[in-house]
Image (cartoon, rainbow over all chains, first blue to last red):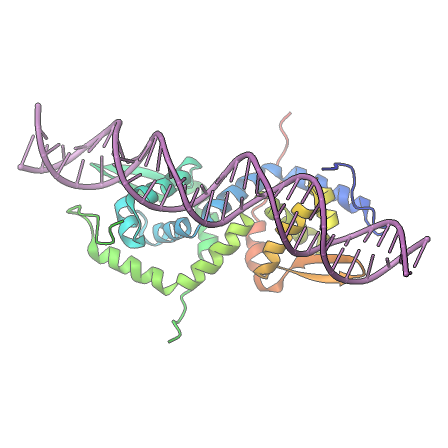
Length: 123
Length: 123
DNA sequence: TAATTATTTAAGCAAATACTTAAATAAAAA
DNA sequence: TTTTTATTTAAGTATTTGCTTAAATAATTA
């Protein structure tokens, strides 16, 4: 694709375009990190896992499999993705591994999860 | 996969499992909607588009293509996805179509975008 | 030590994603 | 009316995702 300016509208505000590019450049690392967390939470299964962890503090893969009615490997792979970027952490108790939301992104996730509201099921 | 209870730990708290399932059921519609928005914002290009719209109020596909150095069709397809679920809206001015963040999810997106912070580039 | 249990990992695969290029729309200008 | 410009849509494709089943780890119990 062409990398030169493709927008040749008379009204195209080149000052604005340049400012936007600079703005983005200033926050690129932050955006990269946040959109990565968003992508993780953007999967419904993982979002449910985070929702449950917020409510229950800690749960094991086996619990999630029961609650979400999914296979243990499927759950385990979702947990791994979130653990890989430190969204969640683990604690071992015998054979059981408990997952919980890590301190690192807790506030951010709490803010998002606070938007989850209870609804009345319409009959 | 087996849908029967797979977790047979002695410690498995069946009351907790049941409560979690009920909790999830109460918020299923909400979770579905939020995780859909999160999935959209979880793409770095789309997150940047939202970030830019928040700052500039409205921009056209052509602007985004310039700023993000991407092809116009690629941008257009990202915009379409967000428009399809009413995350953004459009306004036509001649040949130009301006996109902006819709009122509907503005507060939610603003809260997320407020976490984007400027960083010092380490030399 | 051998068997059981909880979890993870790996390989395979179908579906979804995000781009590309080319063609189709639609409005403005010549 | 023809051409140009802005945008969208469509078709094709490489990559990523999210599951499945089977095998590998690791800790507990018999």
